[in-house]
Length: 148
Image (cartoon, rainbow, N blue to C red; front, side, top):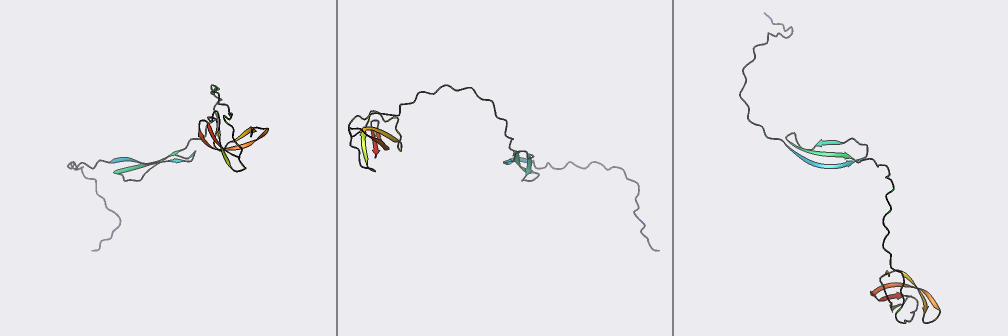
């Protein structure tokens, strides 16, 4: 006699079996923070796991906020303290050097002076001569080195 397979044959479902024994406790999962990156404004925030399902390492992508509206004008601040006068007087005579040369000049006060600044010298050489000279060094509170 030959057997001819004509499809599946299925009998009725049997009774539910008894509960099996409890399994061993599993390994506790861990979660750590990985990187945080700033995304372009308007982008969707992202979270990716670069670890495993048992040792997750979450990397975050946070979109930068849009530029806000300009705020209103703030109140005017208090006036600053008065600055020092940007001048002094010579406290001794000096000879104006040749062009490109320097001379040390004694003055009343150098607190206003800055190296590289040009100064106007009036009445140079005891006469009506006048002109600009460049401050090349501040030697002390009362000495400037000037270049003609």
